[in-house]
Amino acid sequence: MSKKIIPLLFFLFSLIAVNFNSACYAEDIDNVKPGNAYLAEDSILTFKLLDPLDSNTAQKHDSIRFVLLNDISVKNAVVIPKNTVLSATVTKAHGSRIFGQSGLIRLRLNDYKINSVHTLHFNDDFNFRGGRNYANMAASVIVPFSGLLFKGKEVNYPAGTVIEYELDDNLDLGMKEADLLAICTQ
Image 1 (cartoon, rainbow, N blue to C red):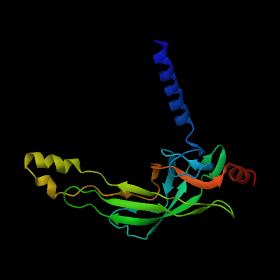
Image 2 (image 1 turned 120 degrees about the horizontal axis):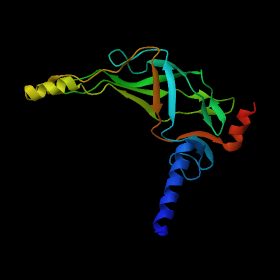
Image 3 (image 1 turned 60 degrees about the vertical axis):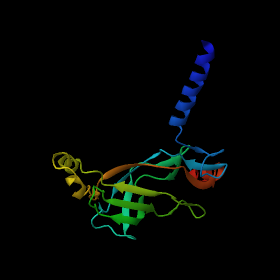
């Protein structure tokens, strides 16, 4: 019986350690140079939009600004302080389409200059989808295939909307622990 409990306890403790340490340093981590500080995938970024996000009006190369509502930090070292205004560029946008396709806005965060030496490069796009229009899909039950002619929902966030975004992948900060700690003491 103890042979089964020990691996289970090891698994639970390792799971807890991973969940409580979302920002850490790389050993052998995907998309992170060994030894670099990084933000772990599944880290939550909370921000408030200064400009609206609307899939009907957004166009490629538009700029969207927002304010961070929490610090982005690694090991108690603040990389980007809260209340920092950041910007992103629209890389793809379209309104909803027939056959239930939702509106889409894809944003690429612009680089953030941490200090005179280090710049944070956001590699992945932030994707916002409008979702399915389930009322229209229900109509297709009454009149078969009629739901195929309806559009999906739009992306529509007015300025001032607070959004929590979960990172899809690890974000390499491009610096070693010593560099990060030096930033904290400046």
